[in-house]
Length: 68
Image (cartoon, rainbow, N blue to C red; front, top):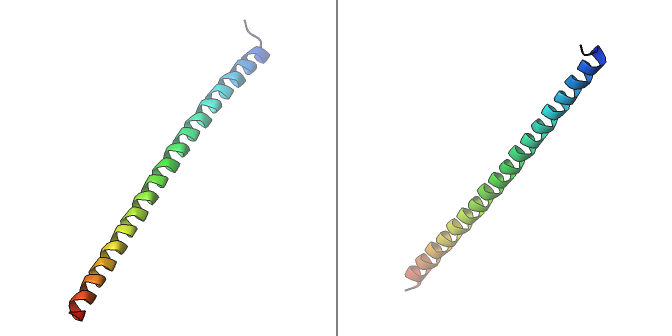
């Protein structure tokens, strides 16, 4: 029969394994979230740049029409 010390050590080791797995899972989730956030930001910047270019083009075309 195992002593209480052996049982306690086994429980501690199992807890350490579970904690390690949880930390690895958290790291994976955080990395995925960071990658997703970067992609969202890049898309937002691209969209904003596109809107700016379209607005400038429209303003230029309007100015050309008024000048003629």
